[in-house]
Image 1 (cartoon, rainbow, N blue to C red):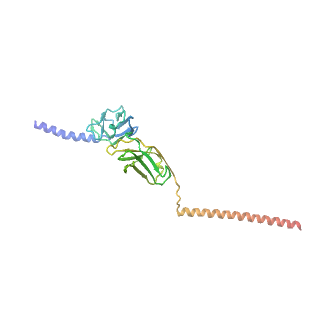
Image 2: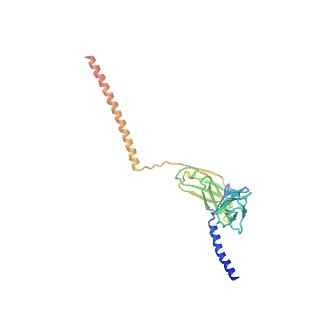
Image 3: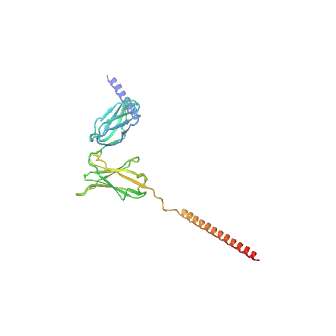
Length: 272
């Protein structure tokens, strides 16, 4: 009996590390949301988890949950699964990760994905100073304000660059809460549509309705400064042009004088 237990214990010590090693070879899954991770209230969203061909089940984990939030079998391609949210509400907002299991064990968790619901509160107001049409290199500031005393404001640039800035709100008695986002030395990369949102610190994935949109247009500026070499070349070109013009004027003047002298000599001979 003792010998049997020793054998089983030995096998367990061998098999357990093997399972861990095999699981360690499973590719880390990736997670994303479609059409995006910032979703208006009551609209649908799909969360995708893509892992390995060996996957038998995909699990979606929501932060602060003990058990998987949802489990799905792979699609026909077997290397990914989808998790449907038919109508976005505050209960779905949060931070998600996904992982999968196969005969080799469980994969590690994916990177975190933040799923945000917008439309929970009235929209703030967005303004820009000095203008929404400026030249490259200028410093501008966006001001996002609201009568609701939000804990934070977030400014988002829509489109391909997808830049965002987050600031704690400022508040004074009987004044709207606000945040001022300063963009130093803007470039054409900042061209696009901007909106801001407000949210409370205890619910960072539940945002207000979007503010009014502002279209920023940054135009290129030519560098007015020039190097000494460029200055010398430009001066040389001016001098050369001046010499050529002077030479042409002298040439035509000399030609004119020769012509007059010829005509004068011809008339003098005719008189003789």
